[in-house]
Length: 231
Ligand SMILES: NC(=O)c1ccc[n+]([C@@H]2O[C@H](COP(=O)([O-])OP(=O)(O)OC[C@H]3O[C@@H](n4cnc5c(N)ncnc54)[C@H](OP(=O)(O)O)[C@@H]3O)[C@@H](O)[C@H]2O)c1
Image (cartoon, rainbow, N blue to C red):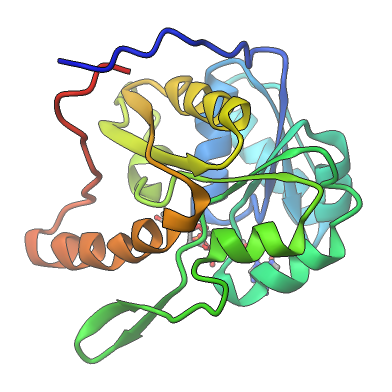
């Protein structure tokens, strides 16, 4: 193995906000971070939906420092904010939260995909990727991209199972990508790997179409593993 990276960011005191935290992906990651003892705020267009999703997680785990709020309040309370809404709502949501997200690490996990008779395919995004679109919309935030290939089904299964996958982390701010790698590492079984600058996010988002095709053929919830790297 090569490439041991000794830098460790301390993320234990951070509050993680999850916009779109009522959906399977946001709720799943929130559950795993809460399970790891992190403070989490779920966001939604409806504070009631967010509160009820947070209560479900506490019920499921039997514990958890997790609350719900509307997306703006969630973004305002958090130190690091995961964007887990469909691509359709991505641009307008980020535009509306520019102020609350100023200075913060933003993690974009959005996969702009279409589906037709042949299955999933990547949508063309003018900015190059959803993550680059986020960076354009949030010039005063520290935008990263990660968690595109993590199965929400595996995240939801907290009955002792680890989430057996690597997480490709992209971004132009080294400290921000280190924080996101550590957040990935908080989930049992998961490992965060730096995978390049944000301009390379397009193919990472697009690779999800291949993973969905794999899942359909092999009846799986596949993730990715990077070989020969110790991180
Ligand atoms: N599901 C997966 O396995 C998976 C894996 C990797 C990455 N992702 C990515 O993660 C993101 C979320 O996936 P998901 O499956 O959790 O999606 P989802 O269930 O379709 O949406 C998540 C939440 O986003 C909110 N939302 C829906 N439409 C919105 C809009 N137009 N504007 C603002 N908020 C909106 C909804 O919450 P409220 O109604 O409560 O506001 C919804 O519960 C997607 O971009 C997807 O590509 C998903």
